[in-house]
View 1 (cartoon, rainbow, N blue to C red):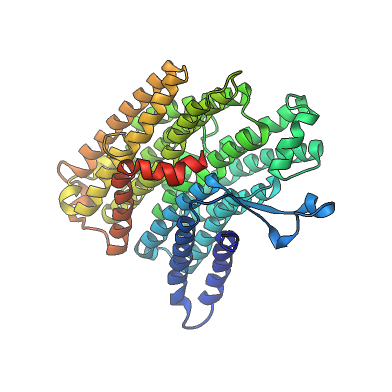
View 2: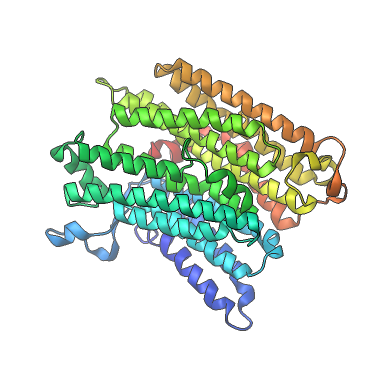
Length: 497
């Protein structure tokens, strides 16, 4: 297993540079796409193979476990249950997105450049979830962010460039806060390794003003990465403007790996689950969940509607994490109840990666065939694009929490866990948000898939095979995911919790 861990980062990053080299060698340019698919496929197989077993701690280069300076400076990679869950999620969505891109991205120039940036972003996200020290967490966050800035603006039109610039500015602000938080913790403890920082914080005063300032900087910066309300301004522009495979990656995994995952690591494994941090997470989650869905209801741009739902659905995850932290911070913590909260949150994180990526891919397929993202300019697509329409319906039912799709089970677990944890109002809010989500997707079904076609939708036809095969793969995950809850809990979710 130790030999696999470095490959999650090395292969995609090395592949990104290999793609650039192949693109400039006569006769080998056509190999860049198969290379990108092969790298991501290998990583997904390796991530599934890594499930089970004990957590793996690996020091880069083999230096870091000894006494003295070696033990202080060693760069640690940690592949534990939570990292394995994220690796499976990231590489599952990445594989589907890169296959979908084979046909979708042909209308753009420099396909090799897309493949290179895509592998760079994927490798960096793998690096984020494997990082055992704060500085390397920051470094990989930045690599993933820089690649995503370029991919958001890949179309080079005015809308894309404006969205990429806004994303760049706010992403830089986020990174500055994260770096400041890391620097403060390093100045207090003399360590960057997360486990060692966590062990030393009680000695320097976990509630001291310096630690609270570091916590505020880290939580604020990561909340911006995760697009939590009120730090969400960049997301509704970036996601609709990006090419569909990148929208799927941004919403499906990037805001999770760069935002929600890092928030969970910092709160539970570094700062500690205190009532203050639990309250912050619960407020962020509840506000994002409610405001995101109400902003989505009024949208007629399909991709913009989906972008606001990303904010809302991530609110469920952060709220569940906050509830787990609140239960663990009590004088007599109930570990079983905290585990239930974490089970719901982590399951919804995995489910959201599947159904939201699926919805963004279907929106890209529809946009490519109809030339529009506006729901009122579509119509009748069930008859003209049956496979895409089927996948869109599966994604819509999943995100709305309709049984027996996967979104129903994760939302139900979160709602029950909130009620058992003594938060009936938050449980009621989560239920109301689920109903409102269903209403917004009724509009999608009515105007996009049913009715009479309008505009270019009259001549729409089914997407090419790589696109609909990618969508069908995610639709299968949405259908089977809920029914396979026990299997997922035992091998994926419980170890992560």
